Image: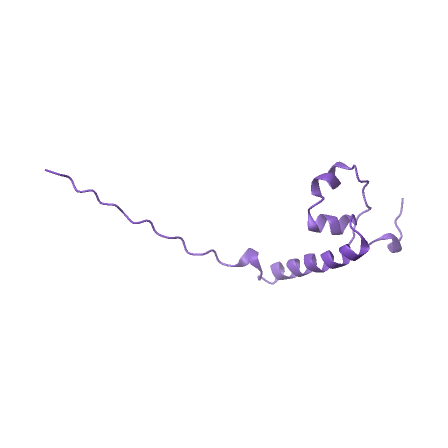
Length: 85
């Protein structure tokens, strides 16, 4: 079945699966998946599409949490044991 563009929600690329579809159940909390497959209401999809788009843009530009440097590791103090004579 061919989907008309009026049936698609913002950011949706694929037909909306049925509620019992295994992938939908598994990925229900996956933001990008939900946007791509149109499982959210129009209003929620609109907001989430903006969030997903912003995150992808930051990743492409080298910003965001994915590219921030890791905090320096703390060095463990060496314990030197004295031998008793």
